[in-house]
Length: 207
Image (tube, rainbow, N blue to C red):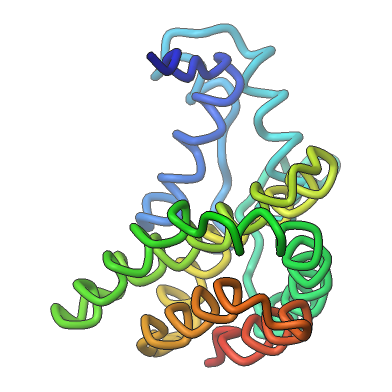
């Protein structure tokens, strides 16, 4: 039996704030009040401060002396900077995971099936979620904790969701492209790393 994932208080607070940003509760340029969040969640200000510090490192929020913490204004250039880094990381991950996924690609298949369903329903939210799930499993299959931590630190899901909300990005269908990657792993394509890199660069959200 798999043990349940227990998130720390700081992680729970961070997810609460991220959900608020993605849902539009806090809009670009709007101030996030540390004390107000602490009161709302009935916690001390220390873990709230830690969560905000992490989100600032992700460049989702920004702080300034005497002005407090505010939601950053997301721009197209933010995405332009993130995706080449992500593509490079996933190229490395694909090359490291190639043999493991050639032997058993089942960890990727549920996301592909879910993507086909999301495409049929024109469900943009599900497309984003399952696309990110697919790539997270791919990176996890590399078996390199540093690589996974660095990839997750890019905040891919959050930035993609925000790009749709704030930049009006039209989410396209990626189910067949992801299915093609699964097939490439199965046939032990020697260019799998380059294929994954080109795929990531090709599906970067654009306004």
